[in-house]
Length: 231
Image (cartoon, rainbow, N blue to C red):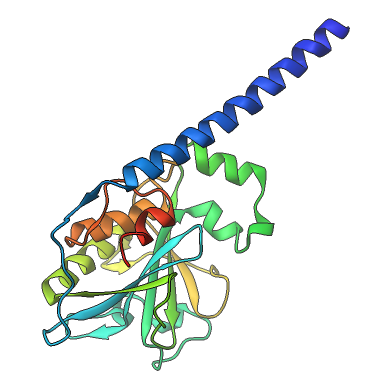
């Protein structure tokens, strides 16, 4: 009996050591690859030129792309009608976009709500995804977690295309997930693509920045991987 218990204990310790080892390896690779950048010659549009100011925001785990609600190039309220949101009116100036694991997003409004099942599934298996959309009342204040970027109208049109293609559409409308959202200013929509640890929410933001020529990391699975290049 003692021999069996010893074997079980050894297996548990081996599994724990493997998990820790993989986590350390993941973080090390993320740090190294995020040090290599693309579009190194990129420079923000000068204030005297025509530009659109967007933001990349981070809560320490997840990043979002935040854009003006209305510009000459798009009024997002056409695609994201205010009726889909519980407490939003026409005075809201910005809208934020995030892409991620559908179950994790919708069932984990706060870290205390995270369950082992959701965490393990999101990390190890390709899962369904959702777009999280939040209307923001006022212009953001630049700080280390809210980085502004001035981009040209052409770059913004490219970003619009990138965001638009992330949504599942039905009859030219984004497919809304009824009854979803954490508060009255946000909600969820069905999204294209599968989520897994090597292609996560931060990679989605990073790919969006790549698509418009902004200097960013080759691979960015962590917020730090993105935000470090937006100083």
